[in-house]
Image (cartoon, rainbow, N blue to C red; front, top):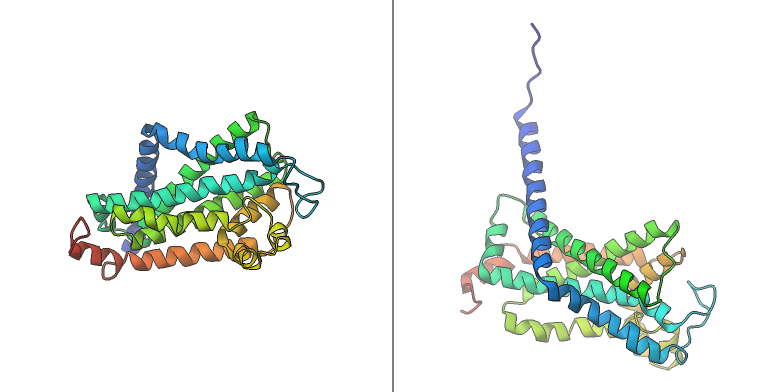
Length: 290
């Protein structure tokens, strides 16, 4: 008669905990995908912004704004090819910020309260939300790349550099999503969201290398804009994708992007602590009023 070794209660509890954590991940990501599938205008609006730059502005500056032969390029390129990684960054940036709006809405309507009171670590619930945001960003980027290719603008992604580009894309989406998550801690009412966005999203995008290279800024004498763009984490995310697409070394950009991701996500988790961010909201009531 064989005796089966007994499984320790601690191991059973760990397995159950992981099962619950994966179920929470599946539920949150599935919910976001279901919402996105019913919001037809969301995908359209996500494509209109970058395509407007690609079709209208890039056409106007195609032969006026030349891009010199500097890293990561081996030859002269057109303006639309230069800004393609920046427009991918635009898609990631706007979706990350829009997800923070969804966090504010869910928090006011009570759904986020239920998620944050679930028997799971708070950081895991926020991580699930961040992963869901990243999945939606990747879907929108894929749609943009398809439409851009149909318009004649393609990135050299077919090759061994594709894996590096996908890594840069995912890390950039996670970083921008974590910034949006951090913003949602401090946005108490939907009415304040537009003002907050104007002070974050537009400076982050326009003071970057998404639309013009750093050497152009320095050459024009805009030294303070050059320094801000050089230190902008969004610039570094775009440069990482740009260098990865051409199979070149992005330098320190990956480390700064990953460091910003960890810092913003850590601060967001701290802000959603019951005694700090989310707890303060609960005391003020659902609408954020005293």
